Structure formats: structure tokens, C-alpha cells
Amino acid sequence: MEQNERYKTRMRFTKTGAVRFIGHLDLMRFFQKAIRRAGLNVAYSQGYSPHQLMGFASPLGVGATTDGDYIDVEFVPGSDEPDELMRRLNECLTDEVFITGIERMPEGFKNSMSMLQSAAYMVTAKQKGAFPPDYRERFEAFLDQDHILITKKTKKSEKEIDLKPAVLIHAYESEVFERELGETLPKLHPVYEGESIFMKLPASSENTVKPEMVMEAFFEFCGFQPEPWGYQVHRCQMWFADPR
Image 1 (cartoon, rainbow, N blue to C red):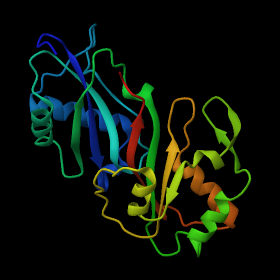
Image 2: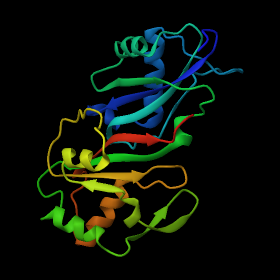
Image 3: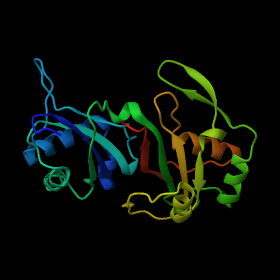
């Protein structure tokens, strides 16, 4: 790549701890300030109110944590190589939000949000009784139904969808989940442990299923009333279409 070309990067980051309670816009401002503190040669938009050229692959819900979220950031000519960018940026981030990987994207790359296809989640019980008794056997029975019909609500409409084909892969331990995926997940940094359900779900703009939707339908199937905030959602990884 020529040194006079602007280029886009895709950064994978971790978000855990108390920072999980800040919203999407606050997280974006957090990254913008860290980039300025690090003195990185980030590219800006044109016009009367220029802003850093960045965007998230998919906003993370308040209260959820992640080791597999991505943010696109564009840089101007002469910027550092990805490893040095990560080092400098992490010096200005925290032990709860930090970069774990940077990839330079090919010419013509649009953005990660438009190319996102699926995502993996770990749903973990934070306290005893957060999941139904014998939750593994009951989750298998839940998925063994011919259809799992729910009403998906958006800001503009409601529609009925079938969750059964949406649970692409599932498991109850990370090692088994990785074996089913055929790949190793990024290192997990959550501080909580307990009964868990791992799921790979669709996450494209045309078809997105959130783990909370699956858990709500599962609890209804079991006739189980969960405790408020009884489980933790952790996004483990995202998968994208080939950018080339």
C-alpha cells in the first residue's frame, strides 16, 4: 500500500467490568478521546463539524460485556503499523476496555457493520437459581421443538420469527463450543463463572437474533421466572463476509 493512501483498520476490543454499564455513544466518545491522547493520525470527516472516521460493527447492549467486538478506524498517510497502533492506543485505554487485535483492511473496504454475518455469545448464570434446574437437558428439549416462534419487535414494526434455525451452534463449555465452531475464540476476560450456554447466532442487518431473545423464549418454555439481572451476556466473537 502506498504511503500517501488513507487506510481503514478493523480493531477487536474487550469491554468488561463496570464499563459494561456505559452506552454505545459514551463508548464511542471514550475511544475518540483515547485516540487523541495517543496522538494517532486518525482521519477526520470533511465539513463544518469534522469528526473521527470510526464506526462499530454492532452496538453492544448496556450491561453486556465482550471480547469479540470490532470498531473500524480510518487513518491518514504515514500512520504507524497495526502493532504499534495497538500498543500506543492501549497505553491510553484501561484494563476494562482495550484493543486485542488490529487488521488493516483492503482497498475498497466499506465497513464492518455491512459485512457482519454472525456472532457468538456466552450467557452465564451470575447467581444460584438463575437458570432452570437441569438447564442443559431442558435447553436441548427447547431446541428440539419443531418451531420456536416469537414476536420480534422493532422501532417500526413487529413480526413473527422462528428461533429454531437461528441457534446455529450451541454448547455448555467453551472447549466444546470451539470444537463445534472449528476455531479458537479470542481469550475470554470475564471475571464471572458459572452455569453457561454458548450460542452462535445470526447478526446481519437483515437477520439479527439477540441472546436475550433466545433466553426469554427458553425461560417461557420452562415456565421459569428468572431473577432480574440473574445472567450475564458476553459476546465472544463476530464473523464477517470476506471484504475482498
